[in-house]
Image (cartoon, rainbow, N blue to C red):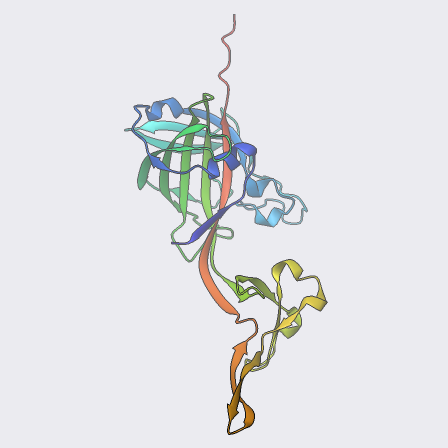
Length: 281
């Protein structure tokens, strides 16, 4: 199971991320979440136009010409299942999230879970509907993983204590294997370390140097991953002579180990309900 990494776009989203999950026995129905929501994806509000999920219609521009921000999510219920669509305006037609002519497509819902949880800091109670859909990127898979079947997750969240609701949309962005290095410090605890960039390209048998992660900018703190000889001597008296029983053994100074894990990053969007228009008097 890959570790999932999502960037936050608001305080509300941070609260939702830390919700511990449990089964929900409430009678609240999906109909309460139907309607329009407005929001943005996290990769659409960064300065770099290359990390946006959709293609940039202006190839030579420093900014994205059609970023996925201030867009609308419409949730309607069909046969007891939420069906999302995305729009540039409440009255506009559905848009392709990846861009014009990409022909991306959202498949039929594959899973629907109803859950509850509590905010780690606020203690507020939440009720969550979490729906998963296969997502076909069509012709535009630049910022969508190719080494797994992409998925879109729609989470419909209600804060029970405050009476608030919002929607969160996550789409797979990248799946890769990440290698992390750890070593033992002077207390024998295993802590994260980073390799010295000057050692890149060395032969496998050559000794390398490492630094504890919080000391990486200090060249005086580099430590070589070599083996030292440790020994101790026990005095021995025999026939009037004093000698020593000498014992020695090799000891790895850092004992560096590499661990790898699959990490899945996702485009994450937060959408808040659009207030209903007041009737004209």
